[in-house]
Amino acid sequence: MQNTSVLEEMNVLSAEESQKIKSFHKTKKSRQIREKIVFFLLRGAAFVNVLVLLSLVFYIVWNGSSILSWNFLTESPREMMTKGGLWPCIVGTFLLAFGAMVIALPFGVGCAIWLKEYANDGKLKNIIRLAVANLAGVPSIVFGLFGLAFFVTICGMGVSVLAGVLTLAVMSLPIIINTVEETLSQVPDSWRESSYALGATKSQTIFRVVLPAALPGLLTGAILALARAAGETSAIMFTAAVISTPHLPDSPLSAVMSLPYHIYVLATTGTDPDVVVPIQAGTALVLLILILGMNLGAIVLRDKTAKKLKH
Image (tube, rainbow, N blue to C red; front, side):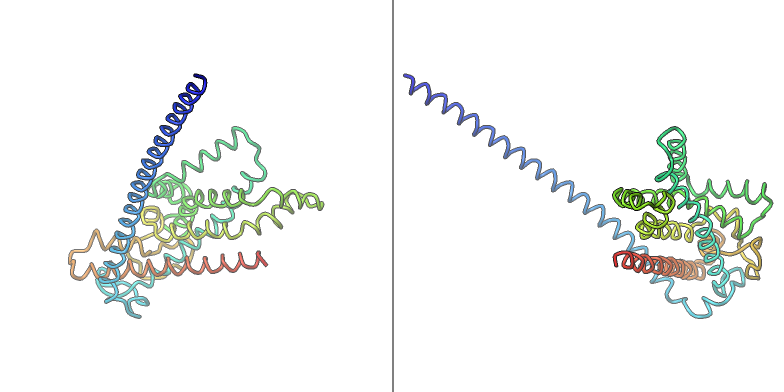
């Protein structure tokens, strides 16, 4: 009898175990199916994004390559921008983008260093981080209106390169601060502690150990901010850009033309699509090449810096 009861208990246990194994396999199978569905949707979304991007690039290249020439790059627009070239727009875009980086990069890096290395956890630090996060989500048109109200009107700069550079610098600050602070967080604390153990001060540790290690990430933030500043229209249409000007800027208070605003003007004021569309596409193609060139230059500099740090 005892043997029989033991056998019955073993059968019950084996039945329960087999049931658990079956349910485990079913759960695993359903999990794998859900995972495949999610990955399929993600791949589909990525494919759609890439397809849209390639379609836009193809359209711009197809319609704009025919108008590209040396004269198109070196002459000024004329006859209501239906003839001539883009030279003042190219110069204006360079001045605005690099001017914004010259101003925004030191302030952004300094703010990121203070938030990561010096600031104590508290209300002030939380308020500053909340302000940076809010600035990152503000539409560019709001920055343009702010620049119009403050730099152009209150500060008396007028529509000028300086007003546009300062507006773009304010707009670029959140990108730089967030990127640099995240990069500083990735530097191991053991490096800081080793520096302190050798007798270095906090400032020496930051400038001789932490910042060199974080330099590639710092340049990445600069690349992102530079690309955004170079392609902005709303932030400069009230502060720096004009429809047409016969001269290149000769002072920081001169107005400029820019490639993004030139595209906008052609799209809103052009009356002959057969003439305007190729110029629009050619201008967009020049802007893409310009931003790509600036980004590639910054990426090469970042990679060289990273290799030097490794050695």
